Image (cartoon, rainbow, N blue to C red; front, side):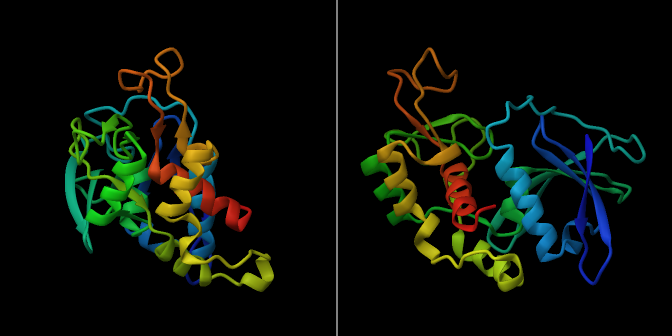
Length: 233
């Protein structure tokens, strides 16, 4: 893991342990809640920068970096978002995947029934944001490997968080809620310009392609790429 420093609420800084190779973050107790808006933006930038970094397979069992005891796989609920992470029973902290962190902050939400129907009409398969496996939309409404629902970046939630920053000081542009929503993602997919979220997945170029080599769309990844472009981050 590498150490990255982020701005803390009410002043100061906190240092997070981040594994880019396995796309996971170690939070000491309460650290996730202590991130200031600027710290959240910096972490969002880091996640965006490493969307296409090859990932190591996450281990089924992990030891706490503080006490070396085995971490416990934990199911949690943040508002309506179901979360999954490894926690230390002694209270030292937890290990959270990038995707699960975005769900925790309500930056990622499940698609509505209407959105799923719209998606099926234009896309044959999407990449599961939870485990990376392809989801055949013609046969499945959730990932058959990890049972994760089909999710997308919630641009309204991200925009609210970013508005807490001083836009004049940072020079970021304002963004309308739809700029990285499902219509924009599908438009980018059809034109092959959905940034880090779309892959022309032929059998020879991607191990995650379904039979027939249909393109795979990563809804969360495409939303992050579009949002990053909107804000030049």
